[in-house]
Image (cartoon, rainbow, N blue to C red; front, side, top):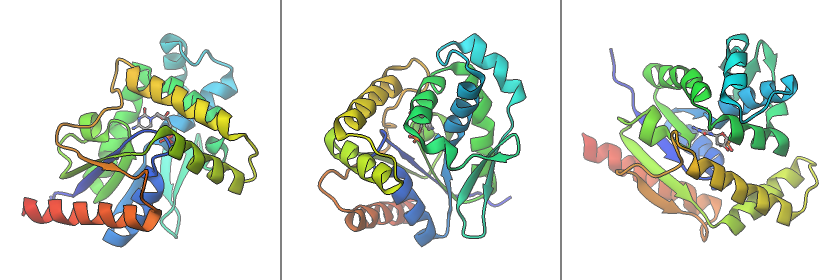
Length: 228
Ligand code: DC
């Protein structure tokens, strides 16, 4: 069986992982896998059930009733299905972001989603973004990038993105949200957000989108060439 190439992009919320990973995937002819969307889908289900989002037992008990599927439309865009319902847009609200951050700290949820992620990497050349891709999900990935930017810059980017979608929030609230999620994601016991030892660190605070993309594509090409 042909061994597929995997590129892991980890980093905190709002560092530009999904936008850059999607663009880089297109450039390199890889499939882009947004793993945050998996946690968001579980978070949405838990919210709908009114469950305690920090209770591993309660959330774990819901998991057998959840079918999370990733599909790709004709434009190559990832769609998320929750028990057959397309929830791709519904999972993008600030409320679901926080729910995802909470449920993602629970061991049964991480175990539940691990196989889905690994299966994608077994079947395709992937660029996968998340928090623990280089450390836990795909420790053998040929390229690992840890993407960061200052919390302030990430908040500004997320705020602009939400406004473009017609979601009206103030910048301070978005910054507080980002800092809270950073704390949640970095301090949890299981699969905390941290760079893999062999990750390349990329800080995009001072870089625009084109420069960030160029940096990432260069790193990928260099690493793949070195590996040959
Ligand atoms: O990347 P995102 O903002 O869509 O992710 C939503 C939440 O899911 C985030 O707060 C942390 C969690 N997450 C995770 O724990 N592990 C991943 N591989 C991806 C996301």
